[in-house]
Image 1 (cartoon, rainbow, N blue to C red):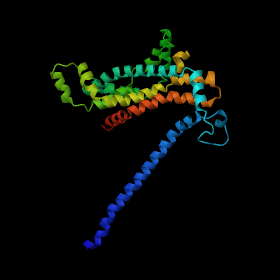
Image 2 (cartoon, rainbow, N blue to C red):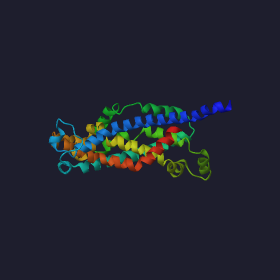
Image 3 (cartoon, rainbow, N blue to C red):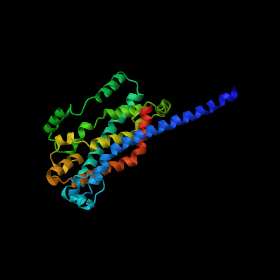
Image 4 (cartoon, one colour):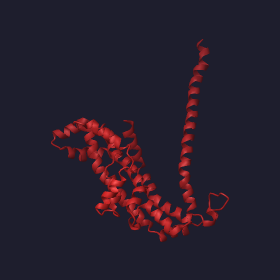
Length: 291
């Protein structure tokens, strides 16, 4: 009887191994398919930026250009519009927004996670409700207020609606909840105040979560067109998306090679930032999401 069960006993691990292999192939195949669909527009943008105009509108579809026209397209994009100025505007706006968001969100998240006070849960619920309010809702009163203060066409007007980030408060609060209370209590016994505890002890441990939020914030505001389109009319102050719109309207017409070259130049900083921050981004999402 024992000898008769041996083949089945040996077959069971083999079947389990086969099922794991098949499921792994299916999962990775699905992920690779999704990655191809996500990367295809960027690949097409890069290829179009090195094609001559006659090949872009050719009836036959070809991935690689027969004639390399990248130098002309990129030279035209760089000389016909201040793309580097647009990129510098984007860096300034994104850095200012991120700095203000962290200065506000870190103490708020610490208070919601570690301090006991009346109405704490109600404030946290209100923070979650703010996440459901689209940016278009307060746009009109904010525009009227900035116009009355003569602050339109300024960097400040592009940044001020985003200084308070409910998402940053929520993300950092989830991280601070897991910070050991014993360390905080020991710091209090040593005479440290709450703000000193926040910035000298708790915040350095939250660098992965801060890095993850920084990626979200920079990508969102680098690509934002809606609010700059409302408050900015001076091309010298335009961030990358608005600068691209000015460039397309004024200079290129139907020169899609130059347009995609300009888009590639303005997209490259985001790709570089993400490549350098990807480990912190993945670690921050994992540490705040799993808990």
